[in-house]
Length: 221
Image: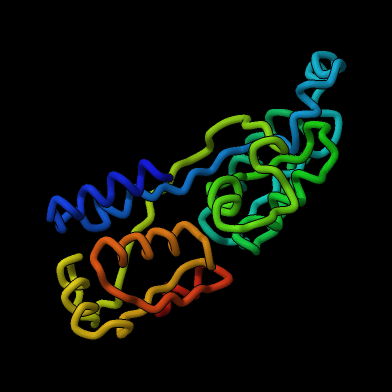
């Protein structure tokens, strides 16, 4: 995250304000990684034996975002593929909230038997530990990465009637009237929140943060 922010700042300091959402804010990536509930399963002496017979019961994939959202739409086709391949039901369970901490805690506290997975994102695995004093799980120790599932770029959009088409326009409007422009995010400490605060600082402007508990309402602003 530091290197991404650094590259974004360099872009602004070089006065290349045309590097808006296409090559600027896209430095803030949303990473989805499928991870096991803990290291216990892989480190257990019986792991090789279990690997030969796995799975022998339904598998659960926990998604830290609401049903119907991008992350949910991503993992459900994956669950269908795993279901067909292994012949066991793959359950997708949505546990949104607390910047992915609720889902992360649930998986971290689950039995380390290789049957509970988390669709991990940088929200719960890197941003939450960096922005919250205490968490009910250790992002560095309680999980084991399995595979990268997807990588998304964040996109900055505005209402078509709003007189802003470029980053330069945004800087001009917000500079004339501080706190006259608001932006939506999926919550305090989320990727979108940090990205827009980074942008505000780089442009030396002040905007009002409006957090939403889910992604979809933002589209109606």
